[in-house]
Image (cartoon, rainbow, N blue to C red; front, side, top):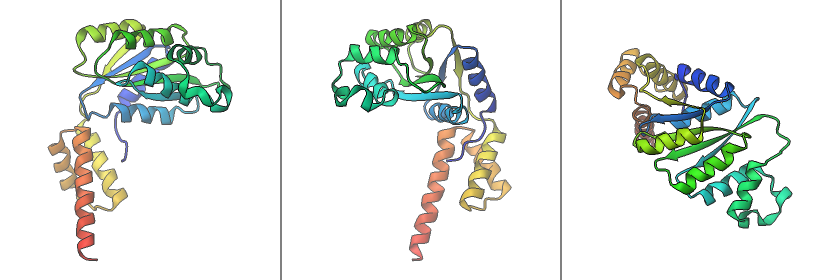
Amino acid sequence: MSFVGRENETKKIIRTLEKGNNVILMGKYGMGRTTLIKHIANITQDGWRFVFTDFSQTPGNVCQELLKALIPKKRYGKDRKQRRYKSGRFLIANIDGKDKRKHGIVLDNIAKLTRPKLAFIRYLAWEKRFQFIAIAEMFLPEDDLFLLRAELMPADVITLPHLPEKDAREFFRTVSNKRGFEWSEEYIQMLAETTKGYPLGMKETVERESARRMKAGNAFC
């Protein structure tokens, strides 16, 4: 799927990271938070290495994800999967790999924070080897958001709004050109107005059109 728009948010997040601050990215489901961070990871890959992890899992599972991504298997042997949580956490916090890029950990899908999860964040953040992007749900309890900010201090909270209409039009125009939909400007305008700049709705609109055309094509085979 094509990535368009979010220039202001992209610049703001990169500037925040360059200042040495962490980022807490909020927005309702389907707003494209993870997609935006993946886009930033792609355009900054010469200077940054971002590791994505699903923070809806237990700290133990998150720890194993990070070990797998950050530490070469040949270095710590085949027993890495069986490595205990505390020793694995220590290895991550004290990583001294050959990759000289700045390292960022993306904590995705934060809907609720338990004491063990907060302790895990605190442990990794304390060493200052990583910067963090925490992708939080809008329904994250206010007390949890306060504690998250405290553990990641200094941290900027950025909330993703709907895309501006001009960006929605550009998205549909780009998709139309790439996929040969041949949508008219009037139809593109109608789609932009109908989806109201909601990224998930825009994506679903394109997927429905692709499925419709595929079905129509099969009917003539």
